[in-house]
Amino acid sequence: MAKTIDARGLSCPHPVLMTLEGIKAGNEDELIVLVDSDASRENVSRAAASRGWTLDGISEESGAYRIAIRKG
Amino acid sequence: MDRMKNIFAGSWGIIGVGVVIGLLAPLLQKLGNPGNMGVCVACFERDIAGALGLHRADIVQYIRPEIIGFVLGSLIAAYLFKEFRPRLGSAPIVRFFLGVFAMIGALVFLGCPWRAALRLAGGDGNAILGLLGLVCGIWIGTLFLKGGYNLGRTQKTHTAAGWMLPLFMAGLLGLLFVFPPIAGEAKSGVLFYSLKGPGSMHAPLLISLGAGLLIGFLAQRSRFCTMGAIRDFVLFRQTHLLSGFVALIVTAFVVNFFLGQFKPGFEGQPVAHAMHVWNFLGMALSGLAFCLAGGCPGRQLFLSGEGDGDAAIFVLGMIVGAAIAHNFGLASSPAGVGPYGIPAVVTGFAVCLFIGFTMREKMA
Image: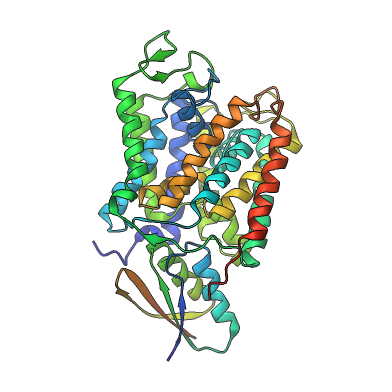
């Protein structure tokens, strides 16, 4: 079960900061990030890619985006 | 329309939007807007405050259609691409005061970050001090962000609540049509107009409105933000938004050059003063307030258009801040800083630092 980062209701740069913190912690190979704005969805995807992580998929559930990212 | 695909979210998208703003701003100046002020969010909100009589500085009174266009253009884009999300509740009172002091700082410098860029592109060397101050203020803001500063989560709200600022803007546009300027008259119905000074200089209404709508639409799609440009570079070494800001400056420089609007120097620049320390510190205060509030004044307008009630409160804070700045002698003029400009900047820093140090929230 991948760790989930709940960044719903937060505006940037917080979702990106939280995602990068999760990546930096180094003990996860997969992360789920929840955001609820399109700008945050784009920013989190972009930030993960810049750290060499792969975007596994984005799904929409109850007005929020569930972004799955994977190391490598 | 597939909302997952946003062509403006890519590098060329944000650069393209910077180029469009860099083209339109000098053209608006050519068509009548004040010098190096083709578009200035702070100055134009200040002019709106004046037109409504919230301050009575008679040279800066005009309902600027560009500002109305920014909000409504963003609203149209948000609806078209299903991104209108009414939300609010992230410490609105704090955002109000950040807006007030962001405006006071901007009026000590005489311009928002957009105008700082346009002043540079027009050859105004004082803008270098302003931009350095902006970077410094944002850098201080990033230290707070790294330390856990956070104004908290927003909540979903009624659609109509998200419409409040767009409706206010539509109301201003209505007033402008009902009470148009009358040649030689300083008042038309409930609106004040300037007979001289920057407030009397403006491009034709429909052109200003059209340019505003186009910029609002594109900026909503691309998330264009001058504060974010610098913040993301400082925080993450990310150059995405920065490329748009740089594209704006380069394009505006080229257009100014060809229109004969590029006049390098420090003295005698339009709507500017050469008090370097206060140009630097004014914009540093603004930069810090923008960073703590999460967006430059333009971005706050675009967010308001997509239903962000907290951004709307920031906008109202800026308009009230403009009224305070001109009523109490805080705003600068080409002669230099106002009689109370310096203590106002000091107070602004004290307030922003208080907010930055005290408002932390663990989110993880």
